[in-house]
Image (cartoon, rainbow, N blue to C red; front, side):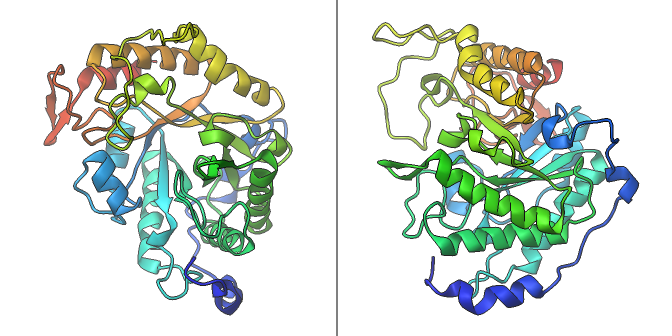
Length: 381
């Protein structure tokens, strides 16, 4: 935080200013039949991708080899291609610095908001559900230590709630079937040795859910699970919110030679994977026990589940990556859950456009290198 008192001066006025609302759907479109459970309990099997235009520019350039600088407009072609390929979901992981005013973070930059407006509009135009995610929130980003933590300090919590309230006000009237709010990315650690607890996470999430539903009671809210979205948030079972898990297991395989991790002496990629020390074989059954069963238990308590991130780096040989991907897709279909691959494009990425595998014969797709086998596998299951 730039200063400890930034909220005292500006938040009241900013909250009072009504942002323009996008109301491109009739109330009848968003009304749920009384006989159906609420949407947060019965998420559709939305499938698609994360679009990273509003992530931090240094993060994008350093980690994913994408020449696109941060805080860029979303690309209509991504929505068009997503629909053309047969998918219907995009998650927008965003850094709050993209819209926070440099002098007063309570003031939201209208230019950035209009970029988000366009993404929401394109979602409706192309039949794609849009999920807004605060990937970097006030006082929290994965593996970054903040002087004032979202999980322990009041001021970043107030700012976090303020932003979600502003989004709720701006997009009130858009059906929940078309737009959701995914609160904060991968709650895990405050410092390398201090972990976020169920109690800490529930307190922050419940405050944000209350701020959203006070303005827009029907807005679909999705909370990432704890421990990098691997563990269900049991204290949110009655919070009128769905939950999201992320699938990057086993990391020895999915993150093999990841450029954004320290160099590690991990075994050569194979699937199934046998780790040293007599540990259980990492195979499809292990994935089911590790990634599916804990979340099926949560689902049985009336909480919808979606896999908001997953994938395997292009540092892994193609045949092995396809095998792991097929196993994951079959488990996702078996569970009835939707998913969002971490990205579409970029070398040292998780997608199928512009990756850098030496063992793939790429096709030209509008000037991009297309991994046809990976795309067809994603479409198949």
